Image (cartoon, rainbow, N blue to C red; front, side, top):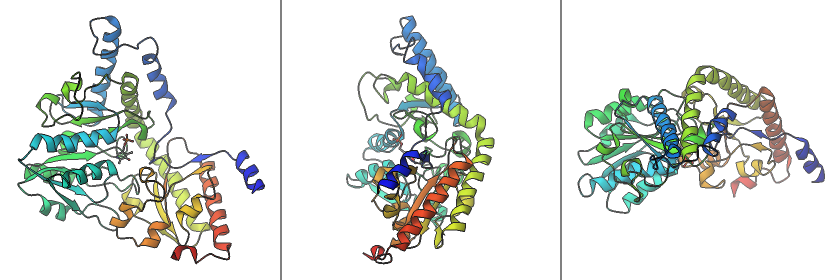
Length: 401
Ligand SMILES: *Cc1c(COP(=O)(O)O)cnc(C)c1O
C-alpha cells in the first residue's frame, strides 16, 4: 500500500477523459483575462465606455459563434450557462411555446441526460415522447425516426456526437427529414463542435447547443444557436428577468465566458484537420496498445464511425469500477461523468450490449495536449492493473454478483 502511494506520487497524472471536460487552452485563457480586469463592464450598461467595450466584445463573439455553426446572418446566438441549460431551453422552451398544440417529442435513446431528463419531465407532464433506437454502433435508426414523426410532433432532438462512444450521428439526414416533415430539429452539438461539420442552414438545424468546457474553454458558459432571429424564435424562456438575450435568457452576461467560447471555437475550427490527424494517431496507438497487451478486450462501437479521439471498450470479467479504483492518476471513466461512476450506461445498453459488457466498459477520449508518452503510460497501467485483478484468487466470482 505504501509502495503504491510512493509510486503514485512520482507519476505525472495523465488525462484521457476529454468527454467529461477538457483543460482550458492557454490561448483561450489569455483572451478572457482583460474582461476580468480593465474591461469588466456590464454589456447592458452601454451608456458608458465600460459597458460599450463589454458589449462590443459580446457582439463580436456572437458573430464568431454564429459563423462557426454555419448560421445565416439572421441566426441568433443565445448565451447560456452551458449545454445543459441550452438543451433545457430548446426542449422546455418549445413545449411551453406549443402549449396544447403540438405535444409530441422525438429523441434518440443515446442522448445526454440534459436532453433525456427534460424529455422525461415532458412525458410526465402531458406530452408524448418517442425514443428512437440506435444500431450496434450507437447510430440512430433513420427509418424509425422518420416513421415516428407525426403531425403532432413539435421537436426532434438528436445529438451530433455521443459523449460515451464518440459515435457521429447522421445529423444532415435528420435535418432533411425534419425539414420535409415540417418539424423543428434540435441538435446537441456539445461534443461535435469543431470536430464534425456543423452547418445550421445546410443541415436544417433549428436549434444547436454548445458548451465551452468540452472544447478547451471554461466551464459554465454555452450557447443555444437558433436558425431564425431570437425575436422570431418559437421558444419560451426558462428564466425571466432583465430581458437580456432578447428576453430568452435574462441575467447579466458572462462576458469573459462568452469571449472564451468564441475563442475556443475559433481555435477548434482553425486547427481541426491537423488536430484530428494527431489525435487519431494517438487513439489508434492506445487501442492497439491495449489490444496487444490485454486479452479479452471487446470494442464498443466502430472506431471508423466515431470522432478521432474516442475509444470505448470492455475488458472481459474486469469490472470498470474495480479497475478504476486501482489508480487515480490516470483519468479514464466508466460511464458518463454526470451519472456517477456506478450508473449503468444507457448508451451501451441502447446499443444492445449485455450487462457484463456494460459493467466492464471503459471510456477514453484523447485530447489536444496528450502525447505519445501519455498513451504509453495509460496502456502500461491498464495492462498492469488488469493483470493484478485477474491474478486475485477471487477473480471470476466478483463479476457474477
Ligand atoms: C457535457 C455535455 C452536456 C452538458 O454540458 P454542460 O455545459 O456541462 O452543461 C450536454 N451534452 C453533451 C453531449 C455533453 O457531452
